[in-house]
Length: 198
Image 1 (cartoon, one colour):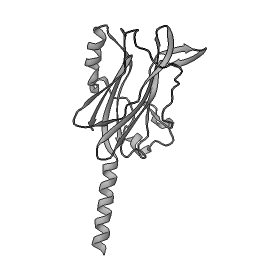
Image 2: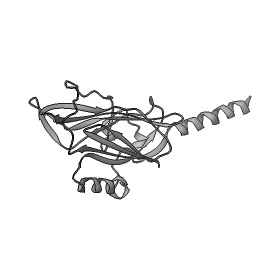
Image 3: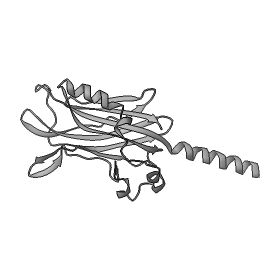
Image 4: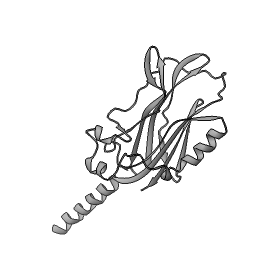
């Protein structure tokens, strides 16, 4: 009986450790400078994304964030030396075809979707839209892990197309397998996510 209880306890501990595996994440979001005016995008969309998200660099402002993870450095920006996509960003910008909207790298634990808080991202550029200041880029990334890693982005870009200001979004849920860098594309902007086990 004691052996059975010990076996169950070891399984639970193992599952708990798996549920909170640590990863290093880097995200680069960029706009396409030269886009075709022939394509039409749906007007009237408004940003909607996951609530209770953690802001990189300010994890303590979310009362749901794990204080032990914060103490270990979770959700804090990493130095530029740890940013693998920085070189790619410099090459992209030097071509004149792309413009940075958001770039950051951090470490965090990732478990099941119910155990892992989404990440809030926001670009530095603010725009005046209908008399109010709004971020040019904002949204959330929901990471989770079951058998595989997954990410569910809800990232919104406030842009102009054919003389009309509107929101467009990247919201393609993706299973992350076998690679380190993943590309998410929209006709007006794109996103690269690099994720490795920390």
